[in-house]
Image (cartoon, rainbow, N blue to C red; front, side):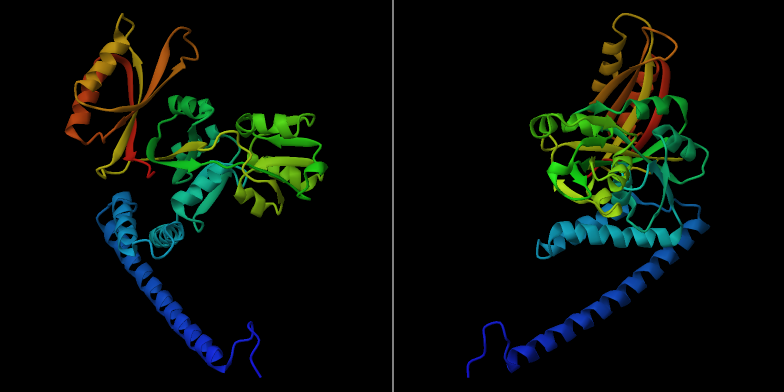
Length: 368
């Protein structure tokens, strides 16, 4: 009598058992190799501690990932491989020294998600009530790093972050460009149950057209963060939140509509702040905060001093002095590291044209 299609025969069953045994053997080898890797990482940590060297070496980490992705040649799905490698590297780094990271809370904000992308899910994260609090925790050395948003591709600069640089003395240690996808979430997962939409002002602005078209008569309210919005939605069946995928899992909500942002390609740039900037990697950025001398052509002279050294600016943003109307500070991002002779010479020339010059840090450029 022929076997049903979905009922494997004796030969197929033996093949499955054999393949599963091979997978088990591979898993055992993976675990053994991971244990060896973390022991070696701990040994590196001890050597670095003896010689007072930085625990975090972003250049080395990038080389590891770049090499393994090239060797993989796309056979194992690349996004999954990247995620696995980042988690392994982060866990090994954390085995050398426990790292605490402050971020704009509560749990499951986009800042929290950016921190996980930078340090892996096994790091210790500390939620802060405001961006200013994040800066203060780092400056007072109560945490090792902070993760703060600095600009969004749609809504522009995050002014709280720019203003916090003027009041604290922290250094930028890295950056991350995080693609932002906004989900409309609630308890039931049904659109018809929604009587109010809540979120942080920026996501509400980034989803304005979708909300006007699909929920024109539903009021919208600002709250302190997307995670706070998700927490509200978890408590109130008539409330929907615009929140991250991490918030959906954290607060056990249902996705009503996925990806309601008005523009695809919505990206937020996050900065990693700490006590010291890392050494040059060969693909870096430098950030400055300057106030120019009060004379005609000052901005032209300042930009020319950088252009004359073939320094490429990627961003310039102005902010008014809080107590001096008509005067402005300029936040400048440029390609290169302050240790590069060309960049240092250009910055030294720029310094002569400024009433205030502050090096905010040189750090690895974000991977695209």
